[in-house]
Image 1: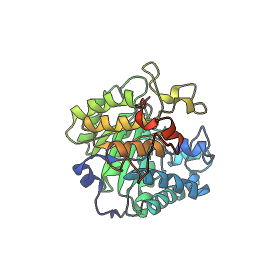
Image 2 (image 1 turned 180 degrees about the horizontal axis):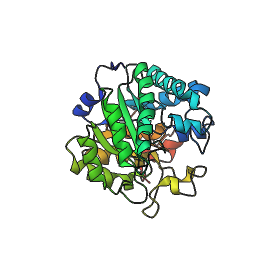
Image 3 (image 1 turned 120 degrees about the horizontal axis):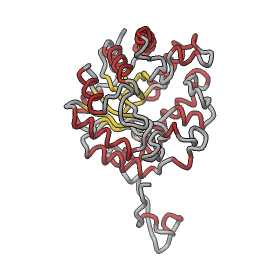
Image 4 (image 1 turned 60 degrees about the vertical axis):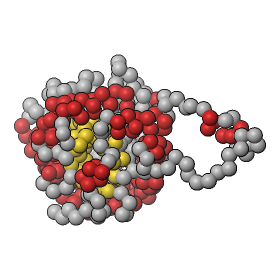
Length: 337
């Protein structure tokens, strides 16, 4: 394996200087655009429609993202076998990294992604070996194509997250490992967020945290608990869909996956989340499902990554030349949600 970073300042150097902004959600957005099948949500779009994937990467990059994740989520052998693509594992992982690398250039870091496998079962000792083999296969291809870090995400089993860290550590690259919490804020084994963070950090993860399933309001308290539990860097990447205390996991909603549009948060909500996360001491601030370029842009503006104003514009509310001026929108406070 080779692991030369293509960008001069790596993830850890950037985090030491201040918050790093991640990108948004890929699979659900690709499905809305007609390139991914709902249900399996497998990432063969890197082979079937590479330019569509490249365009989404460009949108996140232009919006201010400092890390682009290669679309290798669910690009593991057993998952791809469910749609008859087990023989395309290497091709999909290779293409996904190449596409992200081409778009990122020298402007962003590229992360290889290891996701939950749906294979891990602590009652079956053989499953851990199977998960290791799948992660190793993905990582070998991704390293050959030149990634800058590894993100392991959306783990409900702490044991699977620890395997992801174990295999990712072998690359010598920075690692970001994040848990997901369904109805109760506990791993499937019963560990609360603080214990998950400590165990992942003790295992060597450079960044530990929480991602997916929950909206910002129900994710930030978990991230704050992790922040208080560890000395290292912490990540927080909620979904951009509104959830509730009674149903904190958006994938459990009857609206998933075809009626989520009314639940999508306005961009101001994600901007407000980014500012709150920064103030809590969260260093890796990103977003997950439902987060599109507009959300990432609002987050980048809230963090001072890009300017609020995009060039000169003569504003005259007495002689309006747009509905924006005519209705005085700039003078109004727009609620975050």
